[in-house]
Image (cartoon, rainbow, N blue to C red):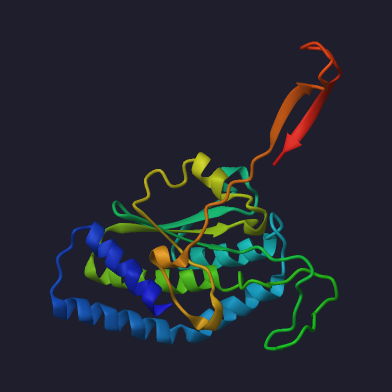
Length: 242
């Protein structure tokens, strides 16, 4: 989380072409680290709260209500239902360039209900969905990083806009392409997207080896034919490829 906040601040300063001395930079970094350490309990509560909701893709109602409430309470403006998706939203704070966009997923996995801090399979509710991939942690930690950087930007009079958004129905490859089509990133300078990893490690860049996925269904109209049939003969049938 500290590295993510430092990356966010460094990106804001660099894109805004703000010149700071080495001493000032070190001071701001130390401030960020101190703020994040001071929000440990808040981060824990947010992560545990989202874990407790256990909502499948496109059903993240309580999750979105809770997270947007936290952001509005911190001074962010929230637009709900973006891209025509009921549980999607965009939270913004600041003004002008650079525009830095923070994203992470929020949906759960079917039949992954699990008691927290238990190392073996023991569901809270048998057969219910749950956070089997750590999607309860991403946006809460983005919020902590954004709040810390927001305070530094206010104090240092740094211009820029911070935006946060959720990956709704990520397990269904369901929404990010619609966000792009709706123009949610048209004026964005940098997107910083995070996802929980194993062993509490942090990685970024080409070494992550992530894939861009798009779900497509093709439908072909064709006629059933044999070698003896003349072209164009035969019954019409539909074939699906996906």
